Image (cartoon, rainbow, N blue to C red):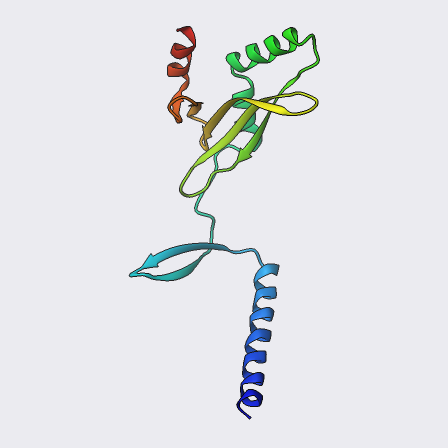
Length: 150
């Protein structure tokens, strides 16, 4: 008898949850999670918290136009006799906690690609940094140029 009583309650909860999920998926929303005294609260935000002053293409162009990137692309193309081309892709976008576009420069060999450089560009376009893979941290372009001279 208790199974019969609980079945409609559980079924209606599942249906309400499904309908609510459909309504959420049709309307894009921005959410921010905050932890308060070991309980989580979800707050809906009216506007995105990150406002980019440059777009993905501008971040890509800032990296692609760097003389050291162009020089490396020409060097690889020359040494491979034109069989390997260098390319780049924006693979990560600014967030409230990390306001950088991430750009990966790689060689596009036919069977696989190999990353040459990782860059990050501040969403204002003012700062471009390169990943120092030895120390696993981003450094300024000036520091990078100094490293390359050694």
